[in-house]
Length: 559
Image: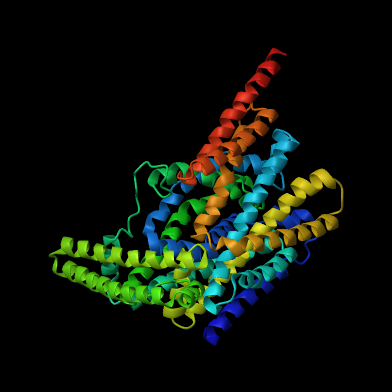
């Protein structure tokens, strides 16, 4: 990579780290460390949440998703606006008014300690694993750039972030996120403009070609539980997922608990409600435009350079034949794309040209499929290389300087997303377990020391998870798959908390029933999309919890 790109990357990261650490000076109590003394303005909280959402995993995993699958992924967020409105009138005033450090403290006030502890434990497991997947995203970039082992890349990115997070607090993380937001959005816009300039066709023609193979298909109204990205899975399953993530996940709750008031906390959520879907569509559009760009500039057969090299060494003849077939298929597809554009310009023969282009695209995909199958036979690893598509484009096609800005955006966003996750994991560990069960009394200095130690331990755990998360496919799917196993059940418990006659025993048994139901579906019917796990978990908790609570209600009424 050119030295100018390195100057941009190092300069931006140094600026963010130094300015963030400066904000932590004078923080000597846990209220300031965990909640910034509840002093963050609503717009900063909202931008912080958005910056975390537009993290490295979005820049790499979601753009790769757009290149391979088009815009369908945006349906995943269709339930977000509805979820934000519901949270604004339910959980936000409940939790902010309770003056708690974590969402799970409220469950003890409403139910009992064991419900609080089990819910907090489930959060720690889900968020700890997801943090590892988030850390894997920049590690994939490093691995693609330098050819270093993934584990080393994880350490290079993870160790400094852990150290920075141990020093910082929510105030530092929030204001760093605000800075990252401007860089990320700027990088997204700059990349879209650059691709459009470099394409040999007009923007309209590029979109027409992408639409011919379904890359612009946004709505799928089929009601199929095995399909992840449909209108109904997004509106129903997505609403439950977003309710749980923004309403009960400490990594997000901690943000609006740091807001000055309930009204400001509500306002911060509306930023995501208004802007998340358009920004997500822009991120996916980068992937779609990269797909069109690759029609005219032949990309590699295998985007993962490490796996490609291993296959060349182990099976040179097989991969050589596939590369020859791929080159011919790509040339035919390019000719078909040019014919489709010509047909559009003259307004005749478009149907036949589109059919020919789709056929040639299927041929290229088939060759790619054979190559990926060869990778799995040779390496024994998952061959999905969707996470390497955008890094390959950035390093080979973006001009000097812009490549550095994009990589700086990826790395900086990753550091802030990881630090935010580690802060929430540390908060839940200390408040919901250490202070609750082991050391109820102690000085703020003591709890700050324990919090920093907990941050370090969770950082190590995230690094371990990150070493294999990148091999599981699209990183954005990995994170949501991890979370969906737990989120629905956690959300169900908070729903129970708002029902007056729900009892502690019902909440605890309901939570166990919810997790058991999700596990039964996840392992017994793996074809059911993970988005529906959120609905299944929440409904199971409500049914079991209310059923168990009814006898207790009747007893109290008769007494």
